[in-house]
Length: 238
Image (cartoon, rainbow, N blue to C red; front, side, top):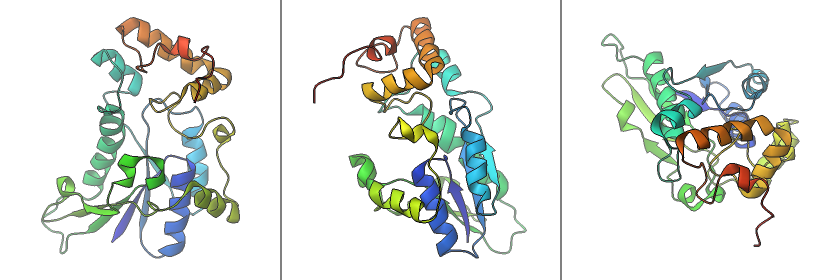
């Protein structure tokens, strides 16, 4: 068995990486980060530093044909909650390609390797994630010479547990957690108006880029309005 650890640099993937290294010290591990082309400026170098603490190397993968911004321009719309091309095309697809190339379907292989692709998803984050199984066979990547499984090892963890686990081991959180709840893309479809106002303060260039693309394609990233309106709107009542 070999582990492919999907890594973003965020708190959940860092806790998952640490736990896997502690729990399975002798199992071969490969840490892979999918770069959407819309990551925080230092996200890759930050991630390299965290991964290096465990004596591992970070493999950065990308879709060679598109980034999140170029995809939005070409499609004439941004990814949405029900059509998350940012995940399928820019994250999952490149990681699957990396797995196929790392373990090709060679006829000479005596035994099919078992690859477990690990994700730092947590049920507490959303109802959709709460409904995900902990372990599933990834048939799209399986074959006579390769067996692949998806595993969510920290699915049942709470955010309190994650933060405590990292603090106990002296593992830092990226500075973006000082003003955002999640270490996602520079601007993400899951951000609240409060998040967007924080981005406008700490990364105004990201807001300007999205605003420009919205005007170009005539389509807003958020159904509730144009991003320039959202960042100046008063806080919504709960």
